[in-house]
Length: 151
Image (cartoon, rainbow, N blue to C red; front, side, top):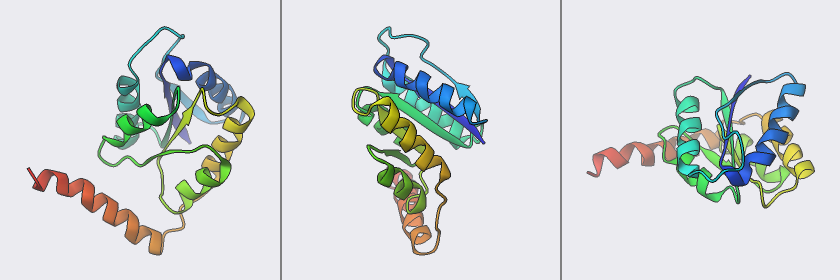
C-alpha cells in the first residue's frame, strides 16, 4: 500500500514518527513535506496530499498539523476525499469501516506518539464494510457533486 504523508510545522515531528513506523512495517511512503519546523501554511500540504490520493498516486493519505483540524478541512475540499480527524483508535476504525475514509488527519499537539501510532495502525488495518454504509457514502458524494450544479 502506498501512503502519502504531509504536515505543516506543527505536525512535523509526529509526521516523522509516523513515517518511520510505516516504513518499518513495510509500507511504501511518499513524504511530501514539510522537512523541518519552519512555519508554513497547512492548506498547501493538505491539498497536495489529497490531490495525490484523489488522483490515485497514493492509496491513502495521512496529514498532520497542530490540531489536525485545519489540514483535514483543506484535504476535504478536494473532490473524492474523505479525511477523518481521529483522536482515538475507535474513531480511526469507524472512519474506515463506516465512512471509507481515504485520508487520516492527526494533531501533532493533541495526540502523543504512542497513541498516534496506535490510531494509524487501527486506521490502516480496518476495512470498509459496505452495505448500508455504501448508501451513506454515495449520499456524501452526491452532496459533493451537487456543488457544481448549485452554481
